[in-house]
Length: 278
Image (tube, rainbow, N blue to C red; front, side, top):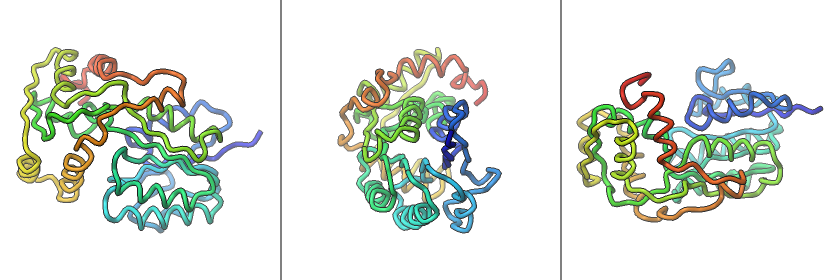
């Protein structure tokens, strides 16, 4: 029985850690985790770490930090994918952003360089509210964001990980581009209201302009590159281009995607929004 050696980059991230969990019980797979703290360290900003982590690998799950839309991403992705293919990597699965034209430049690089590839484009994660930058405002009971009117098909990271795992393991997904969404369109105020209901917590929502939000982030001394990315996402990606749902999760997994209320109910049980394990 041939073992497939899979490298999971961003193994501590929202989708990476879930993909690792799903692969761990597969006796046909040998997993190598890619992160700065891994046994064989990997750093996107230090190409000298790439050779060792790619040695002997058949398949790679690529998640790029901070985002494929940043100006430096294409050059780095080009260099990495060229090296990976040269070292014998047979397949790459790339996590991309839905509606991000800049990220699509990186998608084309992967398509042109990899022997086999699958592109997985995802909408905003549900888990951004419980494991990422929206958690702190929710804990404070006050969420202020721009684009309050934007409709977004928030997507569950568990669904994304299930799709990615299927793509890593099954050749029928080679050459496919999947756009993953949740089953419904919600505004940010609606999503926050669902969280408030499930966590029995009062959470106020205030709509801001992008300029007001950027100024607020600067006052909180958020790093400039993070502010650039957040501003890009709110100005470009949340302009209505993604206000539609797809059936790609059902197409790959044979089941419906997780709706936001189900996510909120399960996350609330952990106590994360009431300061437990936060």
